[in-house]
Length: 224
Image (cartoon, rainbow, N blue to C red):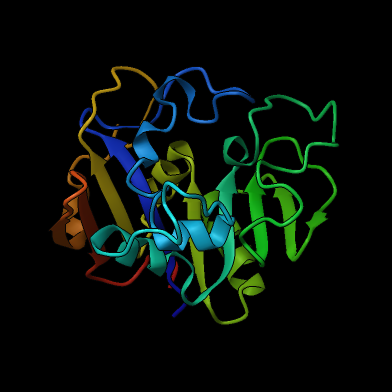
């Protein structure tokens, strides 16, 4: 069965996966880059983004890189929310926005962007963005068809991840607890009491200070 996988979902100690006040200048709101500081130096991120410089060289190896490297393995499509694609809200007044990633997005696969305001599909490099207004079950069915037998990655943001967890559709959840307190933003866990009962949980601490949690589904999905 095709799995729905979440990777690198960074969450503060108080449960926020993004800060308040997202904009073009601040994709993670007032959190800035603090939620992902463990990720940016890894070899996997450096290779994916091409951000090699004197500070990080070709990137770090070790615990954090091992988790980062798993992100793209066996993935044939992605589902993301509109706020991951860009900070705009409401109708698409300007369809010239092509995402945060420039002309070579890192996905190299179909990406289903969940939005109440659909627009024509957008091809950027090797990535096709499909803008659809769909509930989680239907979005997963579409992404599964597009994935060609490979797994589907659920890319976030936190509101979208919470919706798919509420629908009990997530098979693999890699969560990274970052030792910061944000105080405000978008929380992941509201309304998900007892979530851990659906999963086996493995925990790995990293020298960087973050703690990796991997939650793996113990039973079959309700849509299987």
